[in-house]
Length: 96
Image 1 (cartoon, rainbow, N blue to C red):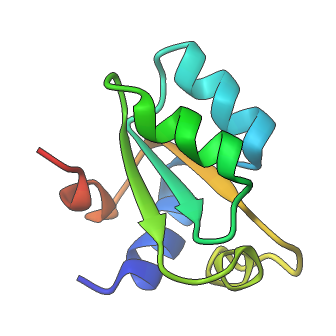
Image 2: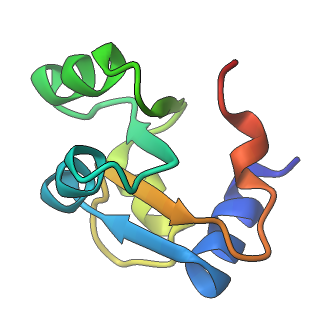
Image 3: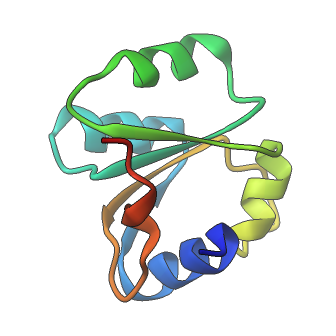
């Protein structure tokens, strides 16, 4: 699976929320199926998301700038929540 391609497909055909605030809202509401966090996301936010047992978390191996680029956005994206994957296979990376 090509993560970047799967992410773009999820953004195009599914329901994805970008940014720490939106991600946290989705997780707290129980809507997020997967949280993606950039490698350089603030430690407090990263730790809070990783500690949650009700949602799977994936740490993107590159920076927020690169994650933004992967999302097709011209700005930094430090975290995102996937609520619906659409036609993407991105949820296959969820930890067991």
